[in-house]
Length: 384
Image 1 (spheres, rainbow, N blue to C red):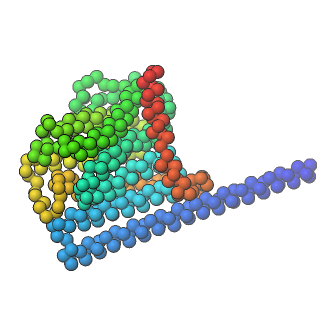
Image 2 (tube, one colour):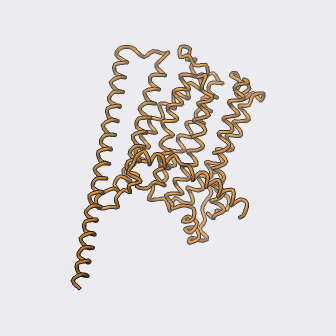
Image 3 (cartoon, one colour):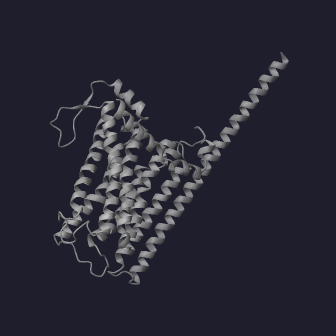
């Protein structure tokens, strides 16, 4: 009896010791995250102050002129957008409490620095613009898929969403414009599959169009500088194909948002959708509008800037500036504050495997989910 009591007391003391150790580890995790967040805040503030001071000195010393003003201003915006996005990525990596969701958020955040840097390089070195545009446009299609994947992750995955749909039988939704007069649709597993297909097709077709553009541009068969609607060049046909593809992808996202907005209400999907759609609008429709204005002779000449293609140069400059605004918006829409709050003394400690920022980055770079989505889409198509 005495032996049994001794064993119980020993087990109890060991459990108390483990609880104290866990509490200490949770406190250490919280302090480490707070230190890193302060470091990122100080570094970000220092970069912004330095950029502002540099801009003031540049204006005072007349460093800006027509030949370099676009490169300097665009470069400043690109650097600021890149630093802000990198800091946001690092914040997520240091508070990696939800790897499935945060890995997708990080992939979306990467879109801003990638757009900003490639646009500035394309504006500065226009001979590389076609290749750089391929990189930027390929990531654009990947970002749309990642956003869809993020929304699916927030809903708990495909199986959870299908169970939710089965629990809400006979629920119908109104079609988006201009298909409103049509009979309301139901959100079924087949509907979800079609939405996935509409997004995946753009993810494949967009890079393929980029490769074709490089080939045509090398043969001087892509775009007539005097007429963008010349049927002897490939610009018209690729524009039509691209418009059909991206329209299918965006309408797929719209149908998904309409069907799941009540389930996603707590995650505020509307602003996330606006951020993604805003980048897509600026990356394509803005360039299309500039091409029309350039063909109509409305745009300035930019004689001293050194741009071979003024519409492409202006488009790249505008993207550099606009990415700074999106970097600021992403801070509020895709911020890490929610996840860092989970690492507190009262909550579950951050697992050892998730406390290493670089290992978290490696996990984010893995893309088994993309492979699985393609596999699921193909399997559904063949056997359902």
